Length: 221
Image (cartoon, rainbow, N blue to C red; front, side, top):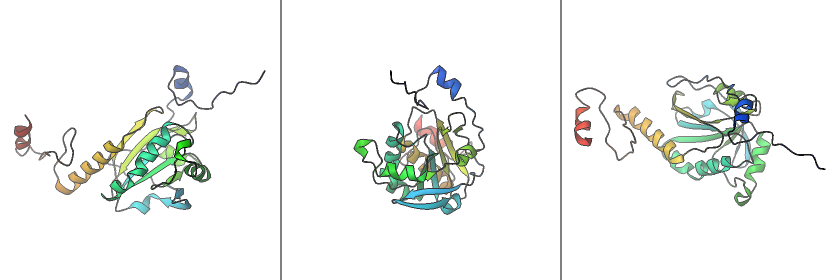
């Protein structure tokens, strides 16, 4: 009788997984605080290249972690961000995807056709965090499982963290929402007004003082 094979890591939540994948992460990142430095080997345009946080000084950076190469939700996210890389670059923003896999694994996945679950041609770097230090520094490492949660960090041109979100393993993230957030933080930095719920570039903003804010509330209520 053949031996049963049990997956090393399930991407579905269950009581058992909640015990096995206990949140042993320690969040070292704070909003308005400096983004932890990172450096590692990435795959860029099919080539291996060492990249680091300081390479992106002067630009906004979206750094997002995903659990593993050759999985299921992960390629949908990475492809979605890569296919819209031009939209990010048009607003002075770069995107990096990172996992604990090696750069060799990243390249093999890129060279796998999309119809077979691969990534195909990429417009964003895939960063290797094989020592798991970057995921640990950003507080998204599930130490028992040895993989990263779906953490996403928006870092401004001065290296300050402006937004972070962390999803559990089974649920992917929204490129539209990420773009909206980048544009909102850029608007605030440029104009000094604040962005209400659901803000888009076509929306009204608020002057952040008791008197100035009245014009906004009079328009929307």
